[in-house]
Image (tube, rainbow, N blue to C red):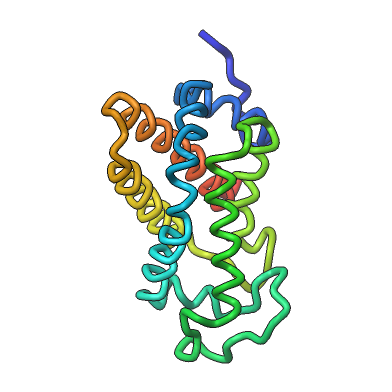
Length: 191
């Protein structure tokens, strides 16, 4: 039996990432499947980004988080939720961030820096980083992650990969998104 330092799981992102990947069996085989899907997935990123933002724009509970000024955005902000349109420059700015995130998932090495990056993705959606005025509730993050997971699954199914490659790729992305979900949810707990 391997002994796990549970306090360290909460304080050391690298240790937590290592534990999660080991426990889930997220291995070099999964990373190769994710990286192997990059050439097919990369051209579909703009459509995935648009689908995510179309979904977000359909609900006040998600869309309202795009009214306050986003960290790093220097342009004008919409004065009200009703005036925020999908073609607003702040939405274009946020879409660029999502596109870079999706590209990072399929191209970057899965090392300690990637664990820190995935953790930062969770943290910036809270008031602990990014814009202090923006704190996305966990229910909205879970909804978004569920939508993104389904979009990835549908995209991978649509690639026409050989069955064994398709299954390996689906399993790899499933593990990856569970890793990401944990590194989001950890910022919503108080200890």
